Image (tube, rainbow, N blue to C red):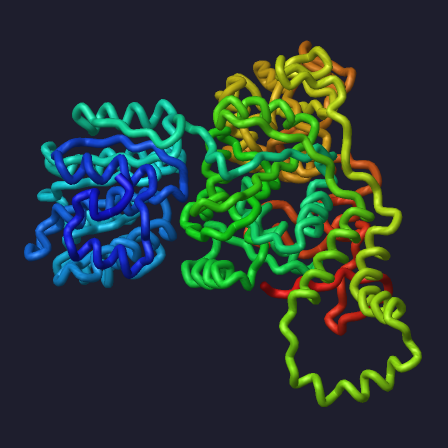
Amino acid sequence: MSTFQELGLNNDLLQAITDLGFVKPSEVQEKAIPILLKSETDLVALAQTGTGKTAAFGFPMLEKIDIDSRTTQGLILSPTRELCLQITNEMKQYGKYCKGLNVVAIYGGSSITDQAREVKRGAQIIVATPGRMKDMISRRLVDISKIQYSVLDEADEMLNMGFKEDITDILSHTPEDKNTWLFSATMPREVATIAKKFMNNPQEITVGNKNESTSNVSHEYYLVNARDRYQALKRLSDANPDIFSVIFCRTKRDTQKVAENLIEDGYSAGALHGDLSQNQRDLVMKSFRNQQIQMLVATDVAARGIDVDDITHVINYQLPDEIETYTHRSGRTGRAGKKGVSMVIVSKSEVRKIKSIERIIKKQFEKKDIPDGADICEVQLMSLANKIHNTEINHEIDKHLSSINELFADTDKDELIKKFFSVEFTRFYNYYNKSKNLNIAEGSFDRDSGREGGRGFGGKSDSTRYFINVGGKDGFDWMKLKDFLKEVLELGRDDVFKVEVKDSFSFFNTENEIKEKVLAFFTDYKHDGRFVNVEVSENRGGGGRRDGKRGGGRRDDKRGGGRREDRRSGSGSRSDRRGGGDSYSKSRRSGGDSNSGSDRPRRSDSGSSSGPSRPRRSRR
């Protein structure tokens, strides 16, 4: 089939399709729509983000429901507010000629009373996030006992976000004979389990291969020291002057910090994460869609509502905890038939993850070098030259030409060109002149075997070992202690390793670059009413010795009369631990990921500085 008319849709929907400018159905639409129109069946559809899944289930649902009835007949569950609103808006556009259609969005962060009022008016279709939907069911504000069609959109992400119990509870209030349509980008075990539990002999369609990345996206990785990650991000941006990108971080804290640093350094950037209010998120997304923001820094959850076709790059500032999540990230670019690039900035200890991702997405990564200063200066110079060459002349300038010509009467063409381009070029040249090389060698890491330095996945030579004064008597085994450390420190799955639990104390390792964070966090930290002490240990893995001494006894939990000796040479005690305050202030640490001490000074508001400055990006 090559047209929507051949799929069997009615005239109202076809008219809306024409208005929207759709010409040919996408592959998932071509496969799913005829099945859902012609038969009452359950369906599992696997397709990447950006392939037109909303229309694939939206058109059949609009075709099948009774618009003359005010009964709720269709329920669509989605993981985030942004995606919920996006689906609702698209369903309204698809059904614009369906007189009497009422599609209502139910999501957190907005008035539950207003949403209940909209439902009461008669909502044939409800689009909802699981948490708010469960809340409204418990308050008896919605009735889904007569729905005929339920959709689990982005099912893998809903399960990753911990909505399995909510989904189970919601679907328990629906008829057993309804049709359930599950749409997902990946098919992990949890999705297969939920399909088996809630669906009856579902038909399955797959666009591409399961979990495979789209062919429109190329994949690159850049190997740097962890402390140079932010500098690498800036260079990748400067090497792509027309970049329009999403930058992924693992935590809300890192997302906000990176965005703030980019803004201070003159980039057009914004943050998108769960701590923002709905109004703030809407403003950020509006600016991004209008390309007033060129670099959107986001968490995985917040980015699920991004529906922008022109994104040129996805930059993985940090790899996700779950490898399958990389598929969702890279799916933000290369949409609507356009080409895109997915970049990954990794430290040495993370290179092994690249091979795991390659197996899942069935694509090879290309290892590339972070551009040096000379390359960036050349790219920026030619970008400026091309913009000037392609600029349409504003003839309002004609009346000023005589004054300009008089000023440059003694300047020949070559000298004039040099002067003109030097205004911008000199800033980049002075900034990057004598800048250091950020690239590092992979060393002995074998990507095929997954081993580094003969130590395998568990061994990391650039790691720090710690003593912690909790153990088996406190209810910890190695897995519980690892989960505890990951949670309180907001670390990834592989960031805590070589965990060894004794009766009254334990050991664990992290990479060297987060040593300060670990030690600072456990300054005056209490767990279940007692102080948890963490110190650097000389025990390199095994045995029960701490710093060359026997480690069998507990430390004084009440701290006695003295303060614990500061463990970091050259630094005082820190009080800016986690708490009620803003722990990611704009203050800079020398040598860290910020711009302080870096090779690029910030530009002053007046456009000049005591040293060379980075030119602000022109808005697209």
